[in-house]
Length: 371
Ligand code: SAH
Image 1 (cartoon, rainbow, N blue to C red):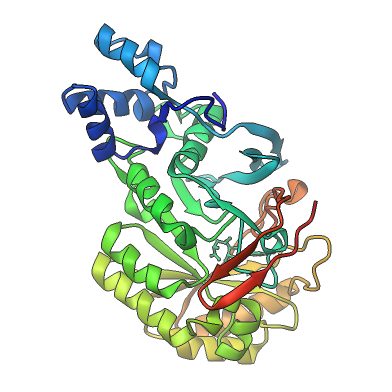
Image 2 (image 1 turned 180 degrees about the horizontal axis):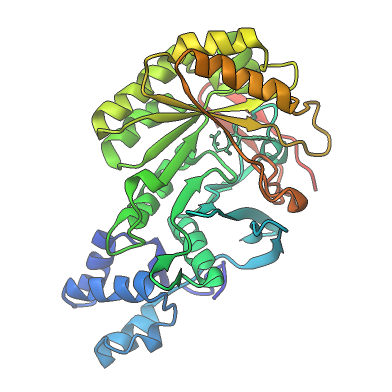
């Protein structure tokens, strides 16, 4: 199994149930073969087509010719003292991206990437420093979850090891909409990974038109990287705010919940020392989100070499939380995990070696590249 397909075989991990049915249909087989295949792939974790023993022999022989199960190649694995694991995965052509598994008492969260690098240029994010290289394919996105399951052992007794999936690795998932949506369908499908819609979270920096589109296409939890309580500050930290401001963004979020019958949107707020962490910011934020179906997740900033930002002191973070809670907001402080292997939010570095200029909306993103 390798990342770059050596031939024209179709990677089965990139196909939703409907696509798999069409694929077996082209081979002259009945749709139930697609169900059988999904059961092998996602219930039994079988990646070797020749070993899928209840498939008719002729069908299996033809499938081996036409299809494969291919996952991203592991370049490096790191395991932190708290059990957090980070994998560096090959994106081909010397590029790499990352995936992190975070075990907790009552759940296991897999943090996956949607792109190699990122074009959004958020000023505090280490992935942004890498620049953008390319979108991951659906098969590479699904392949991350399949690979992590294979590495971790799928389940312990009746309990799954990976119970939650978050798009909080490298990249902006809504900027890779066409590959991300089918991947989410496979995560949710009861014939696929069969994860509940509240346990699959897409995190976005705020691509407003795509939030409306997402509401029409899939049903999963939404997290939004807010990071500032007003447009002036947010535009400095999250440049996409210059195109879609906070008011527009919040409207899209409430629309998303209405369409999906969702409970709340999680707003991520990175705590940057002296930048966005003052009580006045908390009060402004509370005004914005009071009485709204919102949860706030405060993320202590994770530093990386070369950044100008510092993490807010713990006492400042707690005061910020208290200001919000006093005003009725639901707030959590994110625990920093995997410290000793730089596996925390915003530290996923990978490698991007191509120089690329990417246009997103009207802004041209000139990208810095580190070899
Ligand atoms: N592009 C998506 C996913 C990004 S990663 C998004 O913007 O939501 C998930 C979260 O980590 C985002 O909220 C992001 O802003 C945050 N983040 C990025 N760099 C960080 C850093 N150095 N420390 C803490 N959080 C960071």
